[in-house]
Length: 528
Image 1 (cartoon, rainbow, N blue to C red):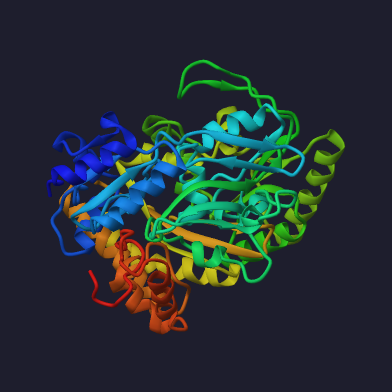
Image 2: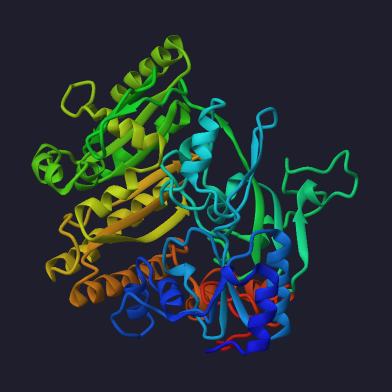
């Protein structure tokens, strides 16, 4: 699609000629993303890492400019899609005639409120940028497992957001406070205290009340992924840094040296059975002693504690003796606090019948693994071991439900491993963590595949579809990446007809279907 001169000129007046482009060399970049080839295959398309390019890319710098762009899309009957750091296929457009609103010029930390423990950020503030500033003040934030390079705002308002520190910091949806939201109509909605007219009480400190919260409508479990407008500023919760906030690094990546802060300790535990692992994780989290507490496979642990494919191949034999590993990290602000937590963990090791392989000196994580834990980089080691990986399932449930899901998935995954289309992890590849010290749990099954090989990609896509079917037929929970009309219409009738209410939300906030619905839902079934 080529924008008519009148339309192009109208957008250009808002952002200036240097911040608008319809050039093929520009728009095709936005049609490429990690995992697009799987999305294309699942939707019956070609094996390609590219999808539909946007009609134009526009870069506003303020909320006012975003509002004007959205209003012009309404005026000229164009769809739009908001884009922050853009990690994953959900950041591509799903329809022709769509304007991609790239928010990279809105990259400011607006305010750090040390007293009330929140920070106000714009869309392109990354987790690493935010945490670097918070470190100076002895503070920390939740970061999703996607890594420190992603938008903290997008994760909070529009995507899932579990992470390695979820035992302490929850997941992204639980950290949202005040929100500034440009609705698909072009109106601005300010949630919570931010919307109060009395300036004495207005502020970013809460996203609720009085009355029912709109945060569930705004994002729910997974977020609308660009289907309900544009979020231009958000406040998120802050936490005290878990140990001494020193950050001393030397050398060159990946062989740099990190000075581990005082009072920070990994412990790698090993359980004989899944049932024992489940009970152990639940019991450990009841004591609320861990900064991190997650389960993975022996292969996953080998990947997390390796820093290249070479070190993985060299080290993996030393991990394969483990049955069902649980990685914990203890953090404290004093020796007395750390000693207490160590004693509690030692007693729990005896109580739950596992082995503490770190205490036995069989597994001793390197100093860099401590840095990567604090920076939410552990999950990215999947990219070191294979050319790409993707996760399936993704339940938000009890630990028993997660454990049942993990065990049920093993024979399914093994069938695809035998076909040599996904990585050979014996079917046990998993990442499971607690949220908020065991109030609920999360489990997903990452798998490696070769994104340059069509057979591997088609196998991975089929495996992902089968995992979705398993969640549906076994009544596990709604998985990751149930997006778009087709999948919502399939899962909704099995889950209290949530798809009906989702459409009512979309119709109420976006009756013209202007905000790209491809990774959310359309106002009417079949409105594609």
